[in-house]
Figure 1 (cartoon, helix red, strand yellow):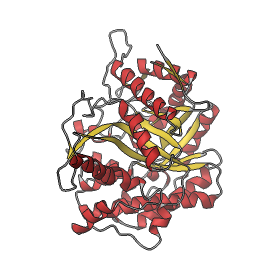
Figure 2: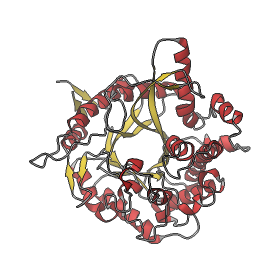
Figure 3: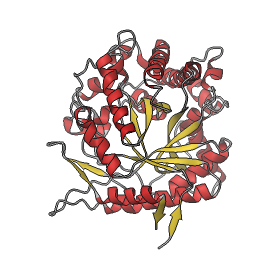
Figure 4: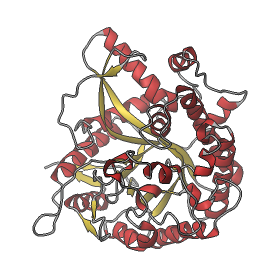
Length: 445
């Protein structure tokens, strides 16, 4: 057995998102979000379920924070439900909603756990969607106001801020493919949503700098490690197009490189130009302090399709989410993104494994697949760090099983098992493995 030591000061944590765990959708003055609307539309969610109760974290947060403390977690990434603070997206404030997050943050700090607050994890207030949502530039203004309000109210206790979670997913899957909220399928709306989301990120960063709050801010992007299906030059070009459309589109503007020309051309030729106004790209490029990396697997790429690239058939075993079991992908992507953008500070803001292991006869949960793949992901990450990548934290997705968006309650990512009937939490075997890794700041492989 080999011990892989992580750098001194490396942080270990877990991650969640508001709609997936909180429940209490009508309590504390919370307004309606697009995910409330979407999940109550027939046929949208597997099993016809919704996040009305989810994990009931709104009421059970002290228990959940105690769980994190028992596992030796040093940091916790969570998101604020925008409509819990501004029920209508802007204007009237719910002080009761704010008080919930103040209690959560105080509980974390009392247990020695650093809060990492995500401003937006997909649950746009429905009132803003009613006027166009991310396709409407007014949503950018509303987001900047919301961000500034939270900096003012929580900046004395929160020092790590994330603007947006995975704009690739909520723009493409929500506005182009229609399989996530708000369930639209419109290329013109997608182009507007992408640009306005990125502009909202930049406005939030600028507001953070203007607030004078001490701390750091960045964005979290969704990623795959793209690999060629064969060794041909045509396939190599297709891989670069995949990176343009799914990676550089959301990273490039943040690092001052603008949107990829291939992507702008694709949208413009189809009557869906990006609504870029003078000064927008400078705002999006407002310097950040770190890059949040979310990654679960790789994608094999071959030439084809209207964008010039398409996914090749998988070659590795598939997990319940349909991903390939590809633990090498995390280290590979971290190396690539570090080289591409000048070695930024990186936090792995999500990485995890869908393993639907259930309690055995003795009540224990042996999620062996999660443990095996987690070791592989972390070993690959350790290798990337050894190669010079500046990675300073890792957040396991997820603390507990939760509402997995359009998959409902059918996919389990937690290191803690959630009994959705009773609400009972049961740490899995992976929780013990991850806790040991965090306490030792080292991985046994």
